[in-house]
Length: 162
Image (cartoon, rainbow, N blue to C red; front, side, top):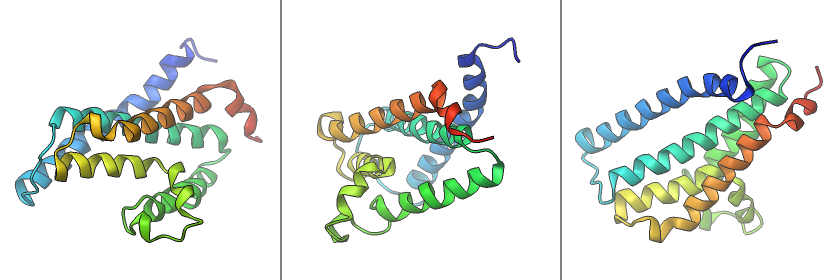
């Protein structure tokens, strides 16, 4: 029992990680621009806005996993096998989605990193704006809202077998 409201507890859990994520975005952007000299052709403000949407999605996913897991080990195994590995292999980060078997390509639409990578490539390499990648931004935003709703709703707490 705590005197905090549900939203205060969730904000207290997520805000430190969100701050670390924002710092990571700044560091990676600085290294990409200054050290590797990757040209930034798009808007830096839009990059930060889309990074915040992606952070909302991944933090919501982490909160959801912690909600449905009974132990830390179960949470780590769930994260590794059901989320991190598919995200790396099916997002288009390592292998182009077009080169994947036809039956697996529709599954990639369930991976939030897929949408974020399209946004990053569009901003960094092509210099396009939101008018070009709005479907990806909308999908990422909806994914984030859905997973946050699942993580914070009472239904998620009923899924865990204590």
